[in-house]
Amino acid sequence: MATFDVTSTEFWDRQALDAEQRRVFDICNGCRRCALLCPSFKDLLQSLDRDEVDGEAERLTAADLGRVVDFCYQCKLCYNHCPYTPPHRWAVDFPRLMLRARAVQAKEKGVTRQDRFLGNTALVGTLGSLTAPLSNWANALPVHRAFMEAVVGIHKDRNLPRFHRETFSKWFAKHAGRVPDPVTRVALFSTCPVEYNNPAVGRATVRVLERNRIDVAMPPQRCCGMPYLDGGAVDEARAQIDDNVRTLTAAVREGREIVVPGPTCSYMLKHEYPWLASDTEGAKLVALNTRDLFEYLARLHAEGRLDTTFQKNPGKIAYHLPCHLKAQNMGTKSADLLRLIPGAQVEVIERCSGVDGTWGFKKEYYELSLKVAKPLFDDIEAARPDRIASDCPLAALQIAQGTGEKPHHPIQILAEAYGLDEGKDR
Image 1 (cartoon, helix red, strand yellow):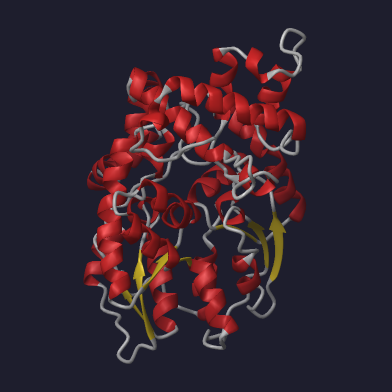
Image 2 (cartoon, helix red, strand yellow):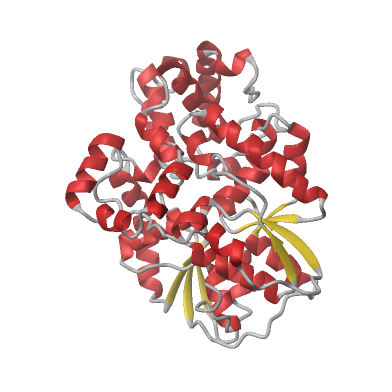
């Protein structure tokens, strides 16, 4: 049976991992509900169907097992599809099994340069922001992109997020707007993409929350840990997780809910922290009190506490529902709230962007990631929207890559509908 205790010997044991993979893959072979879900399952089932394997997971080679792990980009959707997840006696947790396999591989062979670079968002983000706009100019140069592909394995054609000299935390530190008589208080977990690449999303988040008389604090925080975890660097990820649990637990005990404007980070805090953090009880407290941004706003609306005096019509919106929101089983909260804006038409597109985490940046999988995302591009084009929206910053990058149109975070559209001035208090 699976173990996801990173402090146990069994977790790191190659033979135990191999046995668990074959056990789970045998179950997958008899079910096949995920056959069309992602490249991992397609490759796994094709391998099982080879004549020499004949459906027997025990006959899969080490290379077969490795490809399944390599093709997994942690969209988490197979977990919701699977009828055998805990507490079923078969206890299948495919995404965590893939994370475990990556971790064991990294322990045996070392974390690759590629995964160390992609995982160290603080270093990359800090350097990129400190040197902006020079960093953005360099990232557009073909010779620099060829160098990056050769050295750190980021595909030369992958569009990259832009850096901003004024990070979100710098803006927040001098932000003049405060709520004199707040009705409630939250702690904002801003996320790395907001901090370094799209501080406008953070500014819109704060303005919308303050418009609804919510006091916003920003506790000390690090990367959620997902990029390191994606590359098997468990120790590095746990160091970030433990620091976040310590500061976020303190915020919760002060009476604040944690609000997160990024689906991957909210998923991490809710679902991965309790099994990865050293302080299990603190991590459970954080998980219970974490809300994705639009999950939080939707609850305000349900309680009759959301200001709905919108002033501007955004037109027709093609809204991409990120996989890591679907994995949280919360419905289409962002689309539901955008529909409150008078005149807004919202078409929900439930297609995977194929870039989850760091996977779609890697030179090995860039082309495949675009192939996975092709139905998403086609559906957006067919919708003929005035605006494109996605809560996921990496999905937004992929959409821009495939359509040539830049999506916005739904909170930016909501802020515009309120008539909140982005040019004020920058």
